[in-house]
Length: 257
Ligand SMILES: [Zn+2]
Image (cartoon, rainbow, N blue to C red; front, side, top):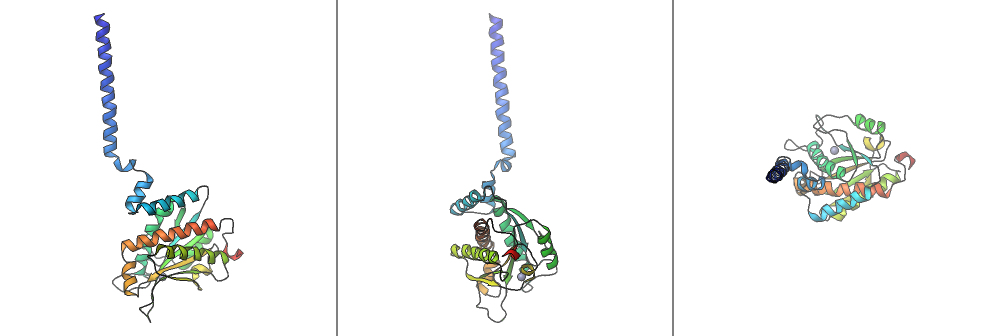
C-alpha cells in the first residue's frame, strides 16, 4: 500500500513539475517574442499611430476588400538625381517617398497588393515607370507628387490628374479627391487633366496626385511634417480602395474608356 502511495505522490510531483515547466516556457516565449505575438491590427495601429475611429474605417475597407484582388502600382515621383521641386533644404522626391511609405502598410492591411516603382532614393526614368506598369498585371497606377507655383505663393491644395477621355480615370480621380475633401484636414483644388508621361504612356488606368504646393509656406511645412503625411496617406488610401471597388467590373485599361 505504501509503495502505491509513494508512486502516486511521485507521479503527482512529476506532473506538477512538467506543468510548471510548460507554463514557464510559455511565459518566457511571450516575454521574448512579445512583438511577434502582436496582431497585424496592433502593429498597424501602433506604427501608424492610428486613432480608434480611423482604425474602424480601415477595418471597414478591409472587410469590403474581402474576395477582391486588387494590385496597385504606387509610384513615388522623382528620386535619385531627379530631385523634383524644392530648394536645397528639402526635395520633393523625399516627401513623395515618405507619403508612399506611409501608404503601403495601410493598403496591405486592407488586402491590396502593392508594387512600387522605387522603394528608396533611386533614379527611375519615366519610361521605366510606364514600362513597368505596362508589363505588370496591375489594376491601377497611382503617382504621388508635390507641386510648386513660382508665380503665386498663395496657391495651395491637392489636385488629382487623369488622362483626358478616360472616364474610368476621371471617376477614380474624383473618388480620391472626394476622400481628401471628406478628411476636413486636406485643402483640395479638384481633378484635372494633363499630358503627363505616366498618364499618357501607361495603359492601365493611371492617376497622378499633386498632394499640395511646397511653394505655399503653410502647406509646404505641412507636407514636410510626419503628421500631415499620415493624414494624406490615410485618405488617399481610402479613395484609392473605394474608387477601385466602385469601378470593379470595368476594364483596367484606360484606352477602353
Ligand atoms: Zn513631381
